[in-house]
Amino acid sequence: MSYITDNFLLKNDTARRLYFDYAQKMPIFDYHCHLPEKQILENAPFNNIFEIWLAGDHYKWRLMRNYGVDERFITGDATDKEKFITYCSVLGTAFGNPLYHWSQVELREYFGCELEINAENAEKIWDECNAYILKNKITPSSLIEGSNVTHVFTTNEVFDDLSTFEKIKGCGYKFEVIPAFRADKIMNIDASAYLTFICKLEEQTLKIDSIDALERALEMRLDAFKRVGTVASDIALEAVYEIPNREDANEVLVKVLNGAKPSECEVKIFKGYLTYFLMKLYAKKGISCELHLGAMRNNNTKMLNALGLDTGFDSISDQNSTSLLSRLMDRLNSEDALPRLILFNLNPKMNSELMSLIGCFQAPDARGKIQYGPAWWFLDNKIGMEKHLEDLCATGHLGAFVGMLTDSRSLLSYPRHHYFRRILCNYLGTLIENGEMTSNLALVGKVVEDICYNNSINYFFGGADRQP
Image (tube, rainbow, N blue to C red):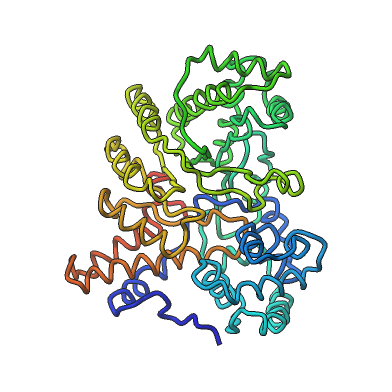
């Protein structure tokens, strides 16, 4: 039997009351994920648990590589069953890794499977879960609806086809699927496929031969995204760069459009300017901005060439750009062009620096206008979430927090929200039982409900009733 119990991570009576009376029942607002919208539209039944659980999930791939598993059993030509059994065998001794918890919870919540994940039980789990999948005709929409999700914000590049979202609206799902606007492929001017990305944007907009044309093209696409419901955007940077002159950014762009490769300095000039332009555009259009900082991408060139992007070879960067982030936010704020902003930090040593900076730019037009985003990627584990809550409470205001996200390509990742909710309730329950805060559970419970769901609705939709 699984070690996961109803009271998992809830270490005292108050924590359990907060979770079961307040947190557990709240819907899920998934305001940042990487689910493929076409898969949601097609809604095809799954054939086996590998397709739902392991295909495309680089969190699990990375764990297997850390155990020395041959790539054949991760992304290679091994059968689905061989890959699944290999993962179960690896997970059985991955004590303390968040996947050790998440995977066990996913089996329990989605398939009613109580077997402990290890090499001995792998084949039994394969058979039991596959029988459940075929009997119940599990589809993407059934997984999302069964998880009590009301909103899914996918992450889409500026040139992506938006017709899929219009078609999804006609499916009658009990949840909304809305694209978040992401211009990273247009910002990453040093990418080998950059001119291809520009061509894709031109097909949707106009001829791009200058920074002026690029700005007009990006605004045209953001307007198109807004027409299908977009209220959020996303920017991912290893570090924030200095804001250069517009003319300098134009020179870099024209140089690259003419076939030349930009220098490292020129890359920073272009990214620095485009970050400033995009955030100003988001403020103008009333779009919230999610700024993800601190990921050092594509460390392993050999594996990048073999497998491509987003396959588990990124890491935490040690670049600290808080001073330049301050200058960026200050300039936007001085120009009345600072959007609602959620800052995601991947380097835990920067928690306090970013939290204290966030407090310098709050405004009454939104509660918690500048947010310290939840523990993300390498930090969305028990230790990372607990540290995030401690740092947020120490220098910010927990009651304004917009709560957890999924940030995943897996349809089985929604238990991460309940994982976070258990940690949140245990954190507050422990403070209550230690006599360090009010014991008014109705008051605290309302804050818990807000963090789980209500604050996100208010932040992205201004409090409007957005039940699909």
